Image 1 (tube, rainbow, N blue to C red):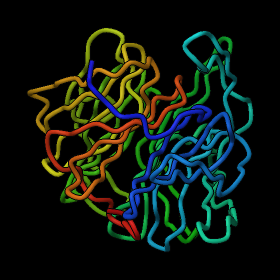
Image 2 (spheres, rainbow, N blue to C red):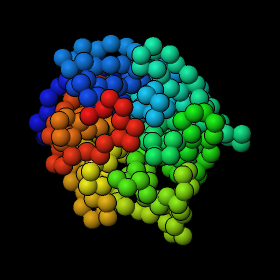
Image 3 (cartoon, rainbow, N blue to C red):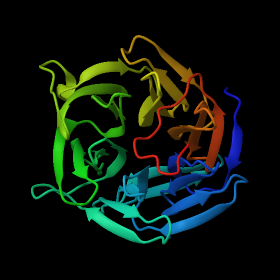
Length: 307
C-alpha cells in the first residue's frame, strides 16, 4: 500500500481535483453537489452549490472552472463509506463557475441532434476548446452508448467528435497536444486518438475499438475512472474495484500500479513546487490525499493560478 498524507476528509464523493499555486485545491463533490475549495490546512469552503452531479472539473482560458455535470447519482453507504448504486434519470450538462463570485452558468445540454446523457471528465486544448466524455446512463435493462465531445469554452460550438464508446470516463491530452487519451470504464481499456485539427480525431481502421488505438487493457477488477497525463506522457489513470492509480507508458508497454486503500479511487492531478506531488480523490472514504509521484506531472494548458 502506498504511503500518503490526508489533506482533508469529510468530502461527499469528491472528484475533479485541481491544484492551485498557493497550496490549496479545488474539488467537486458529486454527492455534496458542490464546487469546494480546500485550503492548505484542509479547511473546506463551498464556492458554489450545484444541481445534479458535478463529476469533473478543469480551469478554462477565462479563469472560470468548467464542470462536467452527470445529472446525478444514487448512493448507498457501508462501513467503508459512500458508493454509487445507480444514476439519476436527469440528463447531464456542461457548466462553469466563477471562482470570485460563485456565479454558475450552464453552457451546453447537447448538440442539435443529441442530448447529453452523463458528462464525466474534460480536458482543455490550446485552441480555446475542450474535449469531454459522456459516460451515458445505465438503466435496469439498457445502457447508453457513450461518446467524446468537443466544445468551445465561450459556449458557441459543440460537436460529437468520437461516437460509439463503452462508458468513456477519463480523458487527457499528450504533452504536445496531438494525441487524445480516453479510458473506458467497464472494458478497462485506454484508447488513443491522433488529433488532426481542433475537435477532429483520426480514426484507425478495423479492428481498432471505436477507431481508437489500443494503448493498454488492464486485468482484474480495475474498471477505469478519470486520468491525468504526466510530463513524460505517461497516462495516470484511477481504478475502481481494486483501487489505486495505474501508470501506463505512452506506448502501453509498461503499466505499474500505485495501490490506494479505497475501492473508488477516482481521480488524480499533480502539483507541488516541482510538480512531483500527486493528489488523488478517494471518493468512498471522502478524502483528498497526496503522495510522491515518480516524475513531474503535466501542467494544465490554462493554468491560471495553478502551480
